[in-house]
Length: 211
View 1: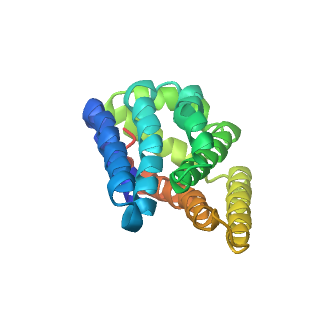
View 2: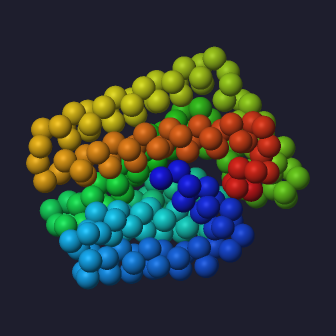
């Protein structure tokens, strides 16, 4: 689940329109799998539909609204009503993936506000490449202060705890068993993605795909 994010980040930065249009490739593929190959690929199809929702919101924000971090969560939540309805359909796995990813995004954005990153973000994305790289690296290093590290660790613990609760729900046995497992994995993936972005930015900001 990590790979699509690291493909999307540089793609949407360089060719935002084609990245956005790829949403429909994911969506149509998912719909076709559910409609014509449901016996074997209904879970894969449902998951692709969920990924398409996250992909679409991500492309909209990072392609055209990246300088306005306050819009990140609202734009990422663009498919929220559909996902909520989808929980009671055969698309429930995709809906679970999308909702868990959105929860991870909400926690991440809250930490961005608490650690002060949101204030500096517009300056990073509006700067030229050389200055943006320097500013992004400095922003990442600022997160290494003790108080901010504690906040990040608390957020990580919260994500892991919620994922643990999801795993426990999956063991109760129901139509949502696989959905809880996928949701738990999607939420934990938030930690991997955020952690890898931070490490990459600390080492070489240009490789983060954010500038």
